[in-house]
Image (cartoon, rainbow, N blue to C red; front, side, top):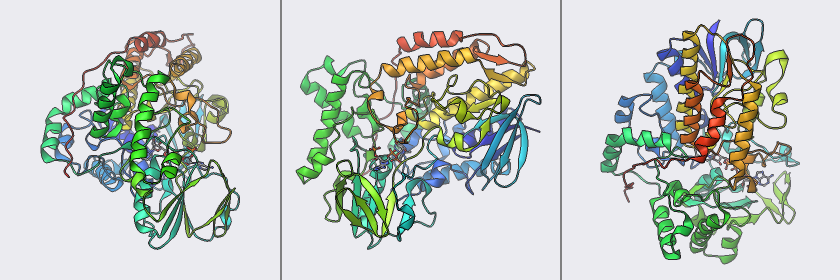
Length: 566
Ligand code: N01
């Protein structure tokens, strides 16, 4: 029997394998559906795919290897998919991780056996292994969402989902292409596709607040400055709200006059990336303050688009800024000034069917040779449900979470002993720099497993009361924000019938880490360790969570001024 099965070999699976195998000496098997490491970066190979978090802190930190931080140099401010994949391959090779990974192997079932206190994991390759612990490292965005448009199977051209892009690439030269969706993925892909294709129809249902990315090759002096500042940079990523080393001022948008406000937005905008989202404190909480940021971005859109009617259609008005994930754009708005790009309003005239030769909306048929589905994912729970996880008494995870996720800290769920979900629902996950959250979770789990071993326990289970308390806390923190106001995938609105909840935790990375650390410091408060009788506990630490969140700290942060080469 293995000590642990880990599912997934992206950032989180690789880091977890390293922590459990190399620092705890556990026997671990990783199952990975792809034929190589990479996770998200293995599957999402669409044109223009790159990371919207800056490369120098979207990578393993000093918790993983200080040497790697000095040795590896990223070529661009926001790394492209091929470079991130090379990085993960390099890590897998250098740390000899592949020998414990079964590639091209999808987990099809994982059942907890109460009497034996084991997990039995089955795969599509016919494997059946048992392990004491099961750790899901499946990412948050891997179950592709194909909207059920009638007639999809009749289309005679190529159909591609961005999250399942052909490895050999797709040549759109001279082709007419429909792109469905205008989320972060489409915003990256459209400028690239427009350069190749004869004609691109972009079918937009909801416009987004796209932020200037400011990507480019990095100045070597900046790179060496970052490398020498790394200890400070990592400290601040772990303490800030979103896991980025960006300072949030204590000033709110109404603490300054109009001119000063505008100049602060402008300066954050020119710095690029998500900084404009933290130009002032409280933008996610105060609708009026948020509107100042929303309007600032609307103006930016109007400035970029030549045709005022197209500009208006691209202007978001139905949700506050940052209540849907804002895409970073590098040439997205310019694409709509091209002759070969047509914006189609799929809100006014929804897509009705896919015909053999194109896409028909309520208004017209767009005849195309290829359709790109940039339609996102059944996020956070989709992949977990697909794995066939059953806990005590054969209860399926999707049954337990039928009304929405019920977890303790987003890490564990009552009735599923010895199961941990890395960046699971109700943890900061997609509301953060993912690698920072992945490391925090994997470190916490590794420390927890070490604690169990030290105290002679082979079992840990979240208590129902603690889970309820975390759910209440999660809901309370969510309700303070503007996030429930948008129909985003963050609240499950993109999947028909999916329970509407805020899936990620919005209390912030720094505060969430303090709560998790408090739970551990209190002897894994809110969990039952070993097989003893259950002790009712709502979790002292969860009670403290409200206190922690009510008293936010303003961590200092330092990131050298980014210098991109022209
Ligand atoms: O998916 P999305 P995505 N008819 O769900 C539209 C991460 N990411 O793949 O908004 C017509 O955001 C849908 O319309 P609407 C990032 O976290 C990270 O773009 O629902 N349209 C929307 O426009 C991101 O948020 C990076 O009205 C339909 C689009 O499809 C997440 O991935 C890079 C439709 C889906 O947008 C998902 O982004 C890229 C229908 N029936 C992405 N159904 C990095 O930086 C859906 N749509 C790492």
